[in-house]
Image 1 (cartoon, rainbow, N blue to C red):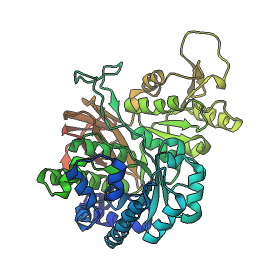
Image 2 (image 1 turned 180 degrees about the vertical axis):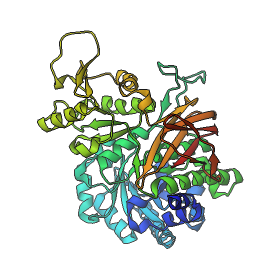
Image 3 (image 1 turned 45 degrees about the horizontal axis):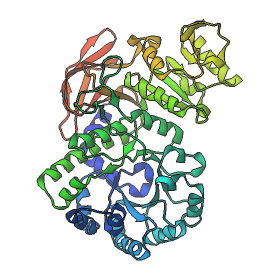
Image 4 (image 1 turned 90 degrees about the horizontal axis):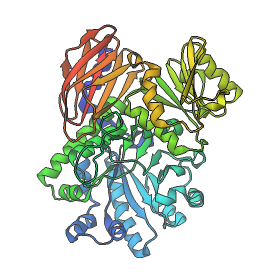
Amino acid sequence: MRRVLRLILRLAPAFLLCAAMHAAGPENWVPARWNGGPLETARRGHLDPSFAAVLKDWYGTRSLDLLSGTPINCLLVPWSAGVEPKLEAEQQRILTSFVREAHTRNIAVVGVLYPAAEPRRAAESAGKAKLDGLALAGEAASDGRFLAELRKYWGKKPVIPLGGRDALRAEADWAVWATKEGVPPRVRITSGDGAVMATTTSEPWIESNTWLVQALLAAGGSRPAWLGYALAEPSVQDYVRAIADASIAGGRWIVSLDDRLQAGLWRREAQALAAWQSISAALRQYEEIQHARPLRPVSVLGIVRDPAFPYPEIADEYLNLIHRRRIPFTVIERRSLTHGAIAGLRAVLALEVAPPSDSERALLESFAKAGGTLVAGPSWAPLKEGEDEFVTAAMGSGELILCRREICAPEAVAREMVDWIGAGNLPVRVFNAPSALLRAWRADSGGTVLVHLVNYASSPSERVTVRLQGRFPTVRLMRPGAEAVNLKPDFSGSGTEVRVERVEVVASLLFEE
C-alpha cells in the first residue's frame, strides 16, 4: 500500500503519461475548447478587433505551446457550421496544418459540427484532415438523421454529443456521454443585494453538477462523462471549481477559455499565465489522483434511475438535493439493478421502480429483510388513507418506507434520508463547512480512501473537520500546485478525524490504513 501512495504522490510523471495517451481513445482525453480561425469569427459575429486578431492567428505553435506541461490532450475546434463555403474551406485548411502539429505533440483534435453543417462534406473533410473525432453541438446532437448521415461517411470513429441530454440515447453509440447542460458551480446569490441564498435549513444554496456527472456515468456504462457548459466572466477560482465539481464524481469539465483569458494567454500577459498555471495545476491534481487508477465510490445509498420515468426533472432533483445533504450515494440504472449493485448499501431509493417487476420486488424486499432500508412509492403496496407523507413498516431486519404520492417531493425525501439512514452510519462527514460538498472514493486494493472537498463560496472555509469511518493513521492533504502535507489524525470511537485549517476552493484528503 505504501507503493500505491508513492505512485499517487509522484506527480510529475503522471501528467506526462496522461498527455501521451490520446491515441488510446476518448477514455483518456482531457478536453478543452480551442476556438479560433475565420469560422469562429464569423460564428461569433461582432467582436472587438483586438480579440478578432487573436482568433485569426490562434491555430499555430504559439497556442499549442500553452499546453506544454498540462494534462490537456484533446482540443475541440470549430470545423463546420454551414457558413459560406470559401470561409469554411479556409478554416479547414488552417486546421489541417494545426492537426498535424498537434499530433506530433500527442494531442487529439476533435472537430465541432454545428446544426447547419452538411454531414457528408464535414465527415469527408474531417477524414482527410485526420481529425480524431467529431462533436455535434446543440440541436445537431439530437438530430437522428444528421447522425445517421454522418455515420455513413465517418464510420465508427468517435462522435461526441454536445447538446441536451435528450441526445444521450444508447443506440447513438456515442464515444463520450457528454452534454452542454450544467450550471456554473457556486453558492447562489440573491439578485440585487449580493446576499447568499439559503435553503430551508439555513445552509447556502449550492449549485453543483456532481450529481449530473454521476447520472451520466451510470447511464453511459463504461464511457467517460463530459460537461460542456461555459462560465460567464470567470475568476481563476471559478475555473478551478468547475474542474473539481466534475472531477470529484469521475467526470471531466471541458475547459472553455473566456475571451479575456484567451487574449491574455495569446499575448503572454503575466496575470493570464498565472491563471493558466492554476487551471493546469487543478487539472493535474485530479488526473493524477482521481482518473489515473481504479477507484470505487464510497456510498451508503443506492438511487435507482429509470430513463422511462415520466418526471425526469423530479428524478434529477432527488440526486441534486440528496447530494447537497452530503449523503454518499451511487446511481444505479434500473436495467443494472442486481444483487451486486446494491451489496454493501444501507438504503435504496426505488421511487422510479414503479411498478416493480416480480424480480425487482423480490430483490429489493430481500435487501430490506436483510437489514436494509427500502424507500419506494405507492405502487409497491396498498396504503390506508392518512396525512403522513411517508409510511414506515418493518420488513425482516430492515424497513420499508412508502411515499403516499406517485410524485414524492424531492425536498422531503432528501430531508428525511439522513434520519432513515442514520447520521452515525454516514461513512464520511464534514463539519464547519456549510458551503462545501464532498465525494469519497476507495482504492480497489483496499485500505486507502480519497476524500475530495469543494468549496462553492467565494470566501474560504476555515477550520474544517472531516470524519471518516475506520482507523487511518496516515492522512495527507493535497491541494493543486502545492506539496502534500501530513495531517495529524484524531481517533474517536471507530472513526478518524482531521482538521483542515483552510479550504480556498478545493482540497483532497488521502486516508491510509
